[in-house]
Length: 128
Image (cartoon, rainbow, N blue to C red; front, side, top):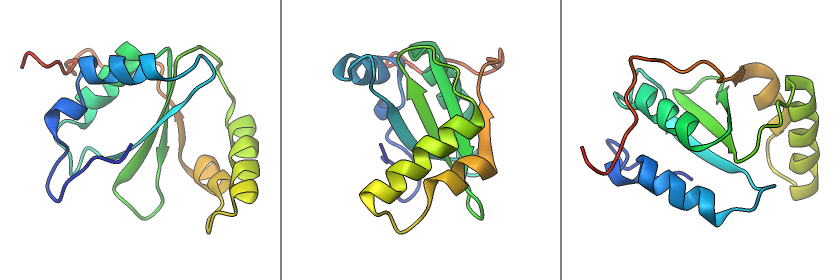
């Protein structure tokens, strides 16, 4: 998902209700990728991460080198994938799909397993 406009993300595309609908639309083996702006450019960043954590069983965050972007990888099941395994899988997909870039490099550079929940961040809901 990449829903940012020129200045922000439409709020309703970051809420628990929206993400629950997304989760229902994928299989148990599915994955949700979201390209979001980091804390410096996005005042909702911490709350977006917290909302993903509440809806999905597992969340990984990749820091994009030379950018303020983060890639959120949300899984509906707990798998606890190590950085090396995720990099290997990502690299294989890059080759298979003939991407112009190697996703393994992205994983190796900026991998973070988002297990701890920030108690200060609120879960975003449709009921502001």
